Structure formats: structure tokens, C-alpha cells
Amino acid sequence: MDRAAAYPRLVADVGGTHARFAWLAEPQAGLSCMTTYRVAEHAGLREAIEHYLQSQGLPRPACAAVGIANPVTADRVHMTNHDWSFSISELQRLLGLERLVVLNDFTALALALPLLGADERRQVGGGTAVAAAPIALLGPGTGLGVSGLVPVPGGGWVPLTGEGGHVTLSAADEREDAVLALLRRRFGHVSAERALSGPGLANLYQAVCELAGKQASPLDAPAITQAALRHADPHCVAALELFCAFLGTVAGNLALTLGARAGVYIGGGIVPRLGEWFDGSSFRERFEAKGRFREYLEGIPTWVILAESPGLRGAAQALDLPG
Image (cartoon, rainbow, N blue to C red; front, side, top):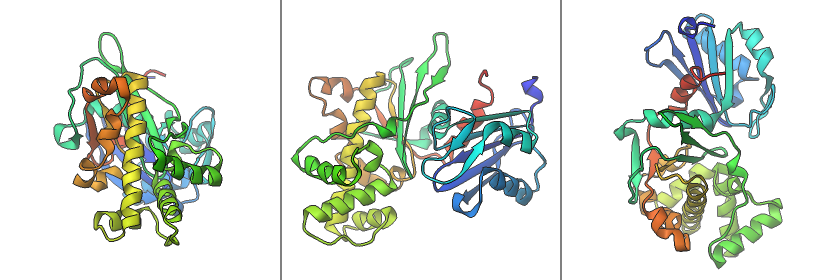
């Protein structure tokens, strides 16, 4: 297929809460017609796409790429944190597409990292990126996404596809041991996502309250975050502090696993909203607290992604990859 002719293109970034769409009219054109819907407002991905095209007055695209918060291992996709389910081949046929690429949303986000400008990320802590080294990516939102980029000799990157958000979460002190014991009693296996996500922050808050002998209020992640940032509730503050510490532990583990000396990026819908509070949290200290490898991690920069909907840019990049 002549990919230069495969325009216009639709790109999407689908999470457990929101689905974002954008349009590429022609080569070298920027993203346009960017729109966000709540996934609960639509019966499925096809219905959301049809609504997007109709509401924006757009023609049928030639190609589409969808980053979705889910493993993509076969033709059938069942979302982990929502009830959307679809066949990739059937969706391509029903939409009349020449090409449809469906990939994990954090794989798509990873593809966007080299495109970020200096004003689209904020460094937390020290460290300097090493050229031609791997890049790590993680981000708490509705779930916990994890990916990265591995450099290719001669230039370019290969994005990683995995489910690192479901690794076993570990404790660094006795207090965290107690919190994980409560979560283990509730869930059995305590993955990183059980603490590092919107529902995970609520889990941490409930555990903090239980350890303090206090009845937890029915608060969701945004309410817990706002109360913590205003210092309005000490239990919300404690929960958010635990969240940042656990995130530092998991980010440090990922950096060591990938040898991510080109840096670690933090995306998702939670951390960018914390602003300077996050900078002053224990995230970076916990990131570096790896015993004999503290010096190694001190040299690795960590950035919070500030760009708006960067996953859409990555999805657009995915259409130009081989395959």
C-alpha cells in the first residue's frame, strides 16, 4: 500500500475513562479536530468513532490508529478497566479502512516522547539524559500504564509493549508493609496498579484510615487529591504521600530493568495535576533509594509529561511503522 496516499487519518487514545480523537488531513499536517468523550457515554469504540466523524463533519478516513488501555495480543480486544469489546478486523471492515492499527495506549504514548518540546515536560530532581540509551515510561490514571523506548542502531526507536502496571508491588518500610497487608487481604495479589491509579489512590486512603482506626469517607481520587493539596485532611495527605513514594519505587525498578539512562517519563492523568506538590514529595528520593545503585539512579532524569493528549501524536506515529 502507498502510505503517502493513505490519508485522511483518524487517531484515537482510549483510556478507561476518556476517549480522545483527532484528525490528520494530509502528510505534514498537524492534528486537528481534537475531541474528548467519556467512554461511558458510548456503547463501544465503533459507536464513539461514528459519533466523532458525524459531529465533526468529517469523511471516512483511509486509515486509523487507536491506542487503547489494554493488552492487544489477538484480534479480539476486551478492555481491562471498561466493558468495551471489539474485533480489530471487524472494526476495520465496518469502518471501511485501508489500514487499522490498534496498540496499547502507553506504547502509543512512548512513541510520542521524542516529539515532546522542552515546555511539554518538567524535570523532577537531578540527572542528565544519556543519548542512545533506553527511555522508560509509566503513568497512573484509570490504571497504571508502563512502556518505554529502546534505541535502534543508526537511529530511531522501538516501543515496548507490556503490562508492567501489574507487577507485584513491594514495600520499603514497616508502614508500607502494613498498608500492603491490608490490600493483600482485600485483593490477594497486590499489583502496582492497586495503589498507583485513580482507584489505587482510593485504596491507599482507605488503608490509611483503617490503620488509624478511622472510618473512611466515600472519597474518590479527585476528592482525595484536592483534600491533600489543600492540607484539608491528614489521611488524604498520607494517602497521596504513600502514592508518590510507591510511584518512586516502581519508577526506580523500571529504570533499573530497562537501563533507562535516557530518562524516565511520568504520564497519566494524576501526576501532572499535582504540580509542585509532587516535586516536593518523596518520589525522587524513593526513586534513587536502591542501595548500591543509588549513584546510578541519581544520574537518571525523571520528567512529568505536561503535553496535552500526547498519546494522539504517538498513535499517528504508529501508522508509519512497518507492519
